Image (cartoon, rainbow, N blue to C red; front, side, top):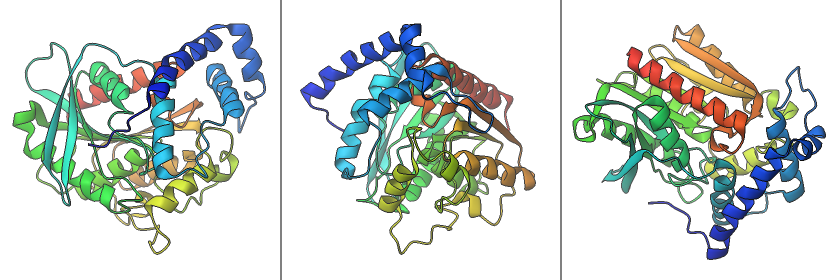
Length: 356
């Protein structure tokens, strides 16, 4: 089980910093003053004012900068920062941990179910983001609880080995093994194997895209893929990496830091299990929801991936959230981000209930 252990001081700081953020966003004059310097239009898009104010606070604190940090320190940094902007987890969800054999070591997942839910449920196999280097089931706990409630589904949050200790393709191997274990053990887990989605954010979106393609010919493939601001091009060659690569939490420098740890120089970054955008065949992939953000360096590669799927005849919904930034699903303290995340969960639930 991978979970960062925060110091007593760090744990005590989280609710204090959260209250401060709430006070800033709840005071219109102060919020607007902070947002003013960050709310200019880019390519016809305008940042949500709460997001803009939060970015201005980050300008002052530099909390999102990773360059110069070791992977271990970066993991601790994000484990402390995410609960500040993501708020306390919602109630009304039960959890249970499961362990199972993986390709190289024992793996585990955490199952989330809405309290009071009965019968066989649809399910979402969730793969957390974090650039293949940071984050964990714990950092995405609140998100998975909200997904379970909003989609009225069981969420199965997969742990997987992180780089650089376990570079590419370790994460792919673990995610693939985890998804197939869920399908094989659907009866024990209380889920309908015909209504299982594969979903993930950022690096987890990358892995979800890979799993959707790798399992399309399985006896029971995913019924749905939901990709949230997915990383699909490890070469980082599309224009949004330049036009949106600074000042929006996820920067070009941070993206490079992640990939340098995950894919060493000898690795061909156009391999489809590393860059799903460069696969040579997309036919037969399950119905896919792609969510991209208007202020995200990964914007163009998410759009390009959706277009590749459409060209191959895959049923695709592309949703551009023009006023949001990378990571909005983990920002429940921001009203617009919280609202968008609720809409995402509801849409996944609708798509799963509709069947294949």
